[in-house]
Length: 229
Image 1: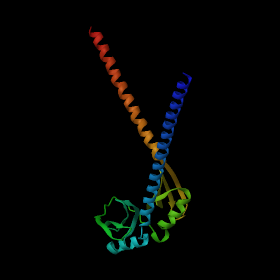
Image 2: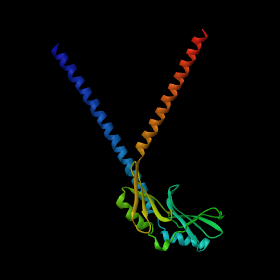
Image 3: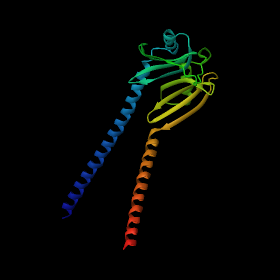
Image 4: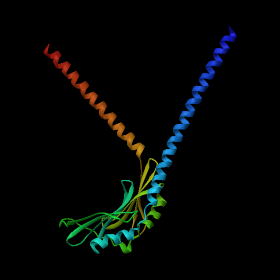
């Protein structure tokens, strides 16, 4: 009788050990997969960034070749459909101009000219006296971690500002650099997971409120029915 009990106990221990061990393997595999995914994302971002062959100056020159030496209002560089694209906007006394330029090949993707709206208040960038994208990125990297993915130069309340976005896993950091003084004006980090949790909490609260309203209406209906009786 004792031997049989011992055998059962030993067998149960083996099964338990295999179960726990298997779970540990699955957890390790899941963690490894997550790490691999984050690594792959970083590699993809690095590959896309390394494909930026056209400098800011060359992009502006291409813009000027098409529209003449007009005032530059905004310069933006970001990934679109898997490749980096420059978007440059400018204006003169009559029209506003926009161009999209492939940052890898240098090919012009789109050109657009529209009549200038008299109500629009345009502010020109003094490009010659402002730091360029590379300089702004070096400054911004001192206040952020991760891979830079988007660059925008425009005026805000009369001040030329470089706004650079960095991605680091689930975190996104936005850094603003004064294009004249070269000082960091702002650095903010958002956690996508926290934002998702916040959205879920809002949905949950809305569902609870909806259920409560339905319950209150049912109680009122029953009360009215009792009064009729």
